[in-house]
Structure formats: C-alpha cells, structure tokens
Image (cartoon, rainbow, N blue to C red; front, side, top):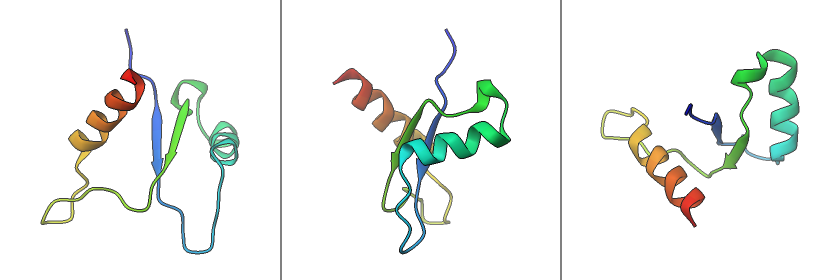
Length: 68
C-alpha cells in the first residue's frame, strides 16, 4: 500500500489559505498522484538545531491523527 500525500503548510503573515485553496492550486500544477489529499496548516515546522525540518515528527503526528 502506498503513502497518502500530505502537505504541512506554514502560511505567510496575513494570509489565511484554506485546505481547499491549496489543493486546488496543486491540482493545476502537479500530477494527480502528487496532489496532497490532506492539508495541515501549522504555525511552524519542527526543526533541529541546524534548521533542518524534522520529517520524523511530522510523520509521527500524521499517523497519530489518522489513528484517532
């Protein structure tokens, strides 16, 4: 079974995009299998000391939210 594309979005100040807006934007620019099925809007992405995004934490949060 393949993974389901998800997008974690940090909006710019003053912007309030909806999940539907982001998916519609992606549909016009990406192949269908790359379009996120789930969009999570967050205040900031988890990063380590050198500034890299901690993808493990995002994956863990995604599995915990789908298990609930």
